[in-house]
Image 1 (spheres, rainbow, N blue to C red):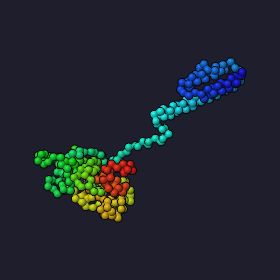
Image 2 (tube, rainbow, N blue to C red):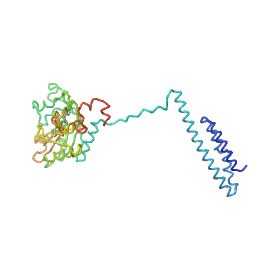
Image 3 (cartoon, rainbow, N blue to C red):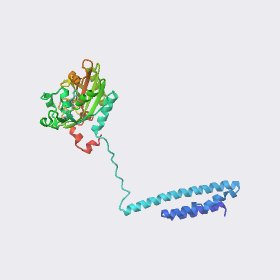
Image 4 (cartoon, protein in one colour):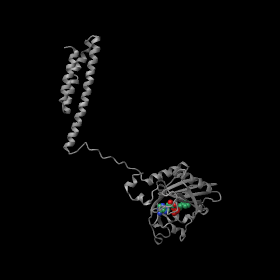
Length: 348
Ligand code: FA5
């Protein structure tokens, strides 16, 4: 029998036998028999040196082709056996592996957190530093140092959740901060101008809820103090924020407002996203939604932290964070953010 015939015989026998193998043990035996060191094929390969150059080329190529084919067939058969084994074992356990799998739900950040990060990034890019402060605050920082002494009517505009009663605390009451403005004082006590900070965080008010009010919400405080800061810097900064967040076309309105810790004080409102200024339930028919209070830091506030108001001036603003995504996406009720309705939350 010529070597080529011998190779053909090996191929036929190997393929025939491979068809009959059904498990890993039989496959291993097959591999040893047809591809192992003592296999016929290996013998042919070893005997190539005894052939003439011409024969060696032809027979060598055919033997290598056969070896590659057998290896290929073996690996396919191994896969098929593994698959059959899987199906059989799933069947034994009553699992139907032809059913489509359950899709994996990836978690994501809450829409308010997403916006919180985005707003921080805008102010960071304008040179502001992000700092955070305590949610349980002293009366002194929340009111007193901000020019809101006891009995001041401005205290009524922020219904407060107190932790200590007046009598218990001996005049040093703690409360849940009603705004992020106390951080103006905490920062200015420690850092000398020039300074530019934003303070995001939770604030609390003892208030009835409606479409734009909830008792726990987020604010972002901004404060810049330096020589020569004017109202133009405040407006420029806030316009730039509104342009970047809401786009060029959104209308922005500034109006006079009163906060005891700024002079003069303003409020900034954005054209309502739901009615585009026409007037609706969300904006109370006005076409505008107020997003922040702001103004020039009151000289008395600067004096209290030993910053000379004759040399330095500053601006401050306090923004309600939840109202910002409401205005961007046209969300008509602030309570949706905290209702834990996944159909709502998954949209962001
Ligand atoms: C203040 O809290 C001032 N600290 C803002 C400030 C800072 C003025 C620095 C001057 C200088 P006001 O109470 O208006 O102000 O609240 C600021 C923003 O918080 C409002 O414009 C509004 O967007 C949001 N806000 C107020 N109350 C609620 C509430 N109950 N639910 C959701 N957002 C609210």
